[in-house]
Amino acid sequence: MTKSKKSEFRPNDYVVYPAHGVGQIISIEEQEIAGITLELFVISFEKDKMTLRVPTHKATEIGMRSLSSPDVVNQAMKTLKGKAKVKRAMWSRRAQEYEQKINSGDLIAIAEVVRDLHRADDQREQSYSERQLYEAALERLTREVAATSGGDELSAAKQVNEVLMSRAPAAA
Image (cartoon, rainbow, N blue to C red; front, side, top):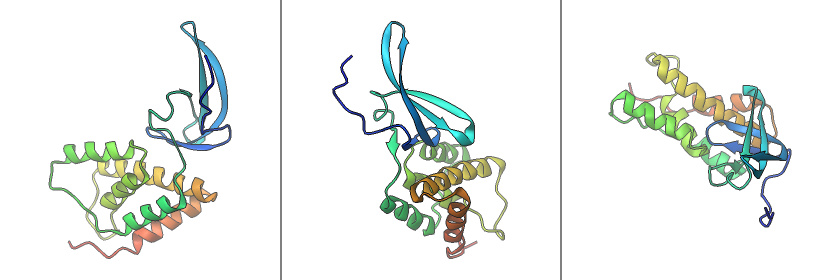
């Protein structure tokens, strides 16, 4: 196997893997699978106590990407400020769309889910599944904001929360 294309990802880089969020490349190793030698990124998702091995030649194809630029993070924060857009579709349909956005790895799409599912204290209760999706999206957003700014998750969570709280209350 020739290593013609040098990868844009290196050990110690933080990356975003669509289905799992922010992880850190701990190494690049070669492994023989079914007689073929593959070069793999070994990515650690410390929070989830999980390690993933991704073939280097497939990384971009499956949507693995570098952390968002500060511009994208700002765009995501602006998205949070927006008015929640809740379609009148059945919950199962909406839940599916939210799930797809969360697993797309697209920070703006994830911010849309957080915005649409966020509830102020005085608003109606969330169902269990709404809460699950909201928390999953919020966690993805917070982790990437933290990793991008080099800060910790606590201050990133505070920042996200302040933006959400600064929104104009939704009409009941």
